[in-house]
Amino acid sequence: MDTYHKYLPTSQADEKWGLTLLDVGYGTIPEAYTYPNEQQHPAAYRFKWEQGRILQEYQLIYISAGSGIFESTNGGKITIREGAVILLFPGEWHRYKPQDRTGWSEYWVGFNGKIADNLIRHSFFSKKKPVFFTGVRPDIIRLYQDIVDYTRHERSGYQPLVSGCVLYLLGLVYSLSKQQALSRTDDDHQQLVQKATALLRENVETKVTIEEIADQLKISYSLFRKVFKKYSGIAPGKYLLQLKIDRAKHLLLYTDKLIKEIAYDLNFESEYYFSKFFKEKTGVSPLTYKKSYSPKH
Image (tube, rainbow, N blue to C red; front, side, top):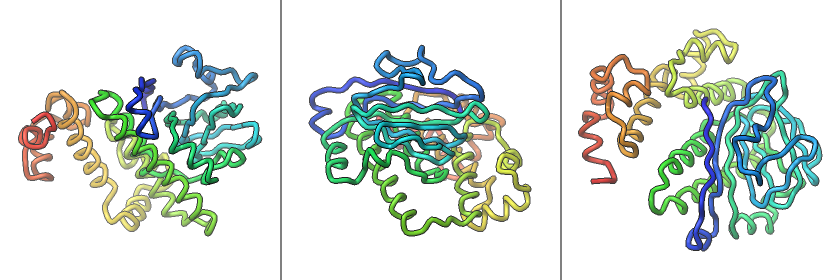
C-alpha cells in the first residue's frame, strides 16, 4: 500500500450540510520508523510523542495491519492491534504510534459538523471509549478507499457525497461495536476470510498471488482456498479478478487513463487480454463501457 493524504477546503454551503470532510489519507508505516513524519502534514496536525496533540476536529483512524499504542485524556492508555478503529475528538489531548517491531497500516478521515456533534451529545460515542476493535474488515477499507477516490479529483458537489460516506462509516463502527457487545466470539475461519478479502482489496493493483496471500495469513494454499470458497461462495482467484474488474470500471468512468494504462495498473498481461476479459465479464468492451456510462456523456 502506498501513501496518500489530502487536506480539503470547505465552503459555507458545505458546512450547512451538517458534516464536512476536512482531510483524508492512508499509508503503511514500516518497522522502526519515526512516527509521525512531520514534514508530510500541516503544522496544526503535527505532534511529537512526548507532547501529544490536540486537534480541532474529529478523526476516525483505522488500523488494518500491525500494532501500536494509543493514549488520550479520557480514554487512558490502550494497546492497538490490527482491526482497531480510533476516534479522536476535538479539544481532546491524545497521542498514538505503531510499535517499532510491527509498524502498521492506517487509514484516516478528519471531519467536523453538527451531525457529528449530535452523535456525541446523544452518547453514541464517548471520549471515555475512543477505541473499537472491529477486526480486519474489507467493507471498512472499501469506504475509506471510496472517500479517497472522490477526493482525488474534487468534482463539483463531492463534499455531501464524501460526508455521507463518513456518516456510513461511523454507523458501521457503531453497529459492529453493538454486535460485539452481544457476542465476543468470532469464528476463526470467518475472520481469516475477512483478512484475506481485505488483503486482496488492498493489493488489487499489485502483482500479489493467491499463494502469497495464503502465506501472509500463515495457512496452506489448499486449506485457504477451501475455507475462502466456503465462506464467500467464490474461489479467491476469481474474487481477485472480480475486484480488478470493479476497479477497472471505476478507472474507466472517473479518470482519464487510457485503456492500456488501466490494463498495466491492474497487472494484466496486455491491453488485448484485459479488453477480452473485461468483455467476457461485463458483456461490453472497456471502450464501450466508458462511452456508455461515463458521467461526462
